[in-house]
Image (cartoon, rainbow, N blue to C red; front, side, top):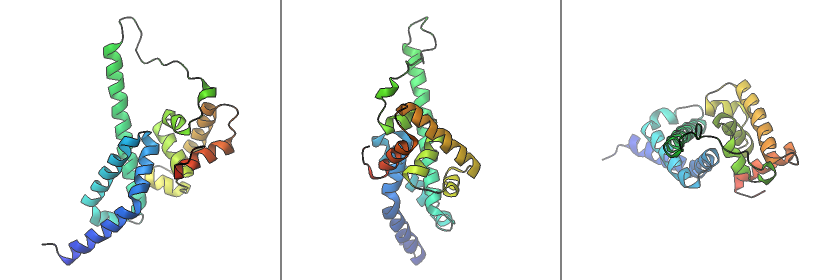
Length: 190
């Protein structure tokens, strides 16, 4: 049987889950670019939070803590996928074909999908752009989520936006890129 404290903690966690699960799944989707993995990552993050709920609920910013867990899980998933792709490429690469990693440059004018462009950014740049523009977090809140300095958030966001502009083509002004990234917040297309 649960105690009053256990029941109160469970009710509090349930309310937190209901309030933030969809947002955490959306964050996971934008960070990984994988809709199928988003729910799993959000659920894994919330499971980790439940195991540390006494510490999480006492934190100054429990939602930032949850976003940080999702970001770390997404980073781990991306790194694992990259390692697996490299192993497969090495295994199937014909002898003398070089390192097997070369990818032809994409047709930049054809890159109009912001999610596709986001997937091409290095994780930290992608995380900063997504948290700042799709989730409207302040530089300070983004630094809390990612565990980096505010200055790093500023530089990585700036560089990430510049890279998105490059990927989306010269006809994509910064304002259009910001609007397109922000449209991902509601699942809207640009």
